[in-house]
Image (tube, rainbow, N blue to C red; front, side):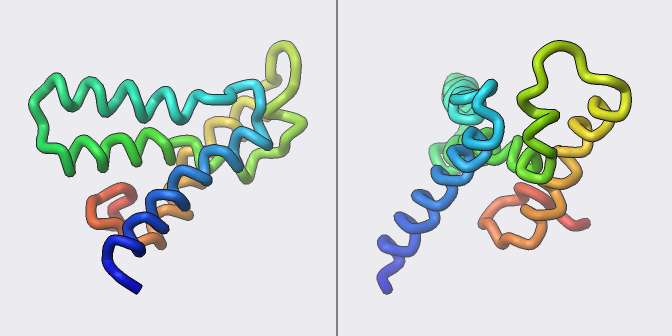
Length: 113
């Protein structure tokens, strides 16, 4: 498989992951994509190189991936969360890190050191 095809496959896989999170958490539908777009817009205005801007966009797309391990009843609960539920929600960033640290990106999305 060519390098171009591998990069296209990686990009489409990265773009699919936020959609999976949105299925479990429809309340925040589009949030990860919007974070990625906002982050890349800011990074471009800062004059960062294109590759770094794309890496920042990817990070924005994946920042909530840990929500996949939060029960959907909590993610879609109307009203206020109780203390335990809120603590579970706060764990999504650590859970996302645990998953992403196993993936070898060409930039430090979840560094292990």
